Image 1 (cartoon, helix red, strand yellow):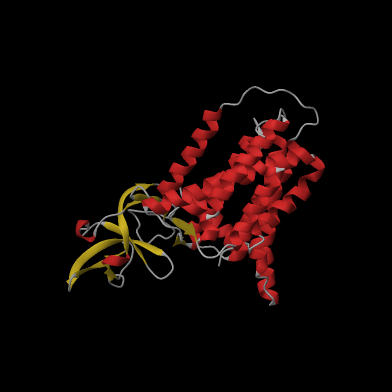
Image 2 (spheres, one colour):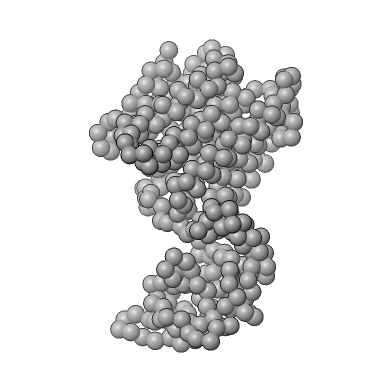
Length: 370
């Protein structure tokens, strides 16, 4: 009986005033996790593992990790084309610690209770439980329903449909393989949004399409993969999926520039023959004083970045101004101030970005990209 009370307390926290609605979620999530775990243990409900096997995946946990990784990779790839924006979350040590406590407590509490509820009610209640958790998690957002037709469409497409699809996938995972499977999907996806310093700057339609399609595909695959006969499976190697997830996070941090370097695909031939179309350049973040004439730098233009060679450096007051030109161009670019410089090219990997450019052209042809 403790879990329903904990769920109600958790659902009520967004209605608290000001910062209490945020900080209140941390103890509410811990209380929800404790109550669900205690009830599951006392009633003998296996919320951590269920002896089911899939046909083509080692377990639903692996499928969940693959689905989460796919969603992150697609969003990040689209960000390469459409640009990135700065994360709205704090990246101070205190901010990271607070956000980690918030994310961990809420996700663990919600997924433990989800596994308990759906295991109690059985497979026929997957949609019912999904609907329940959708309203529990997003009830505060439903208070402010839009009235204009376009805003209603945007609200349905960007909020309601993706979130409900995600809840459906998480509930099926929780029923099939318990807490481990659902947390294996939702934690990487949520961590990407909360702890990546830059986020893809996507149109709401594109964002909604990705966040709906991946969980929907995962749900369809899981339904198809389930075998009707329950069999005992060998204990899975936890280190394998933890290592895979760690590798994905490290790769994500590298692409975001968190290590001081980031890759960038060259989409024009303005730097031929030194840099060809489809080459990937590794850009190092450097100060303006480290840049010399002859270096190839990357800088921000209007809505894109340019990778050209420095042909002259001038001093305008206290600020350095760089004159750049593509090796294949006849004229120099407009002057580039130091605050627009992303970094200096330190390495070129030939041709491996051609696939990315082909994907970009396909998305343009289909009307997904402008």
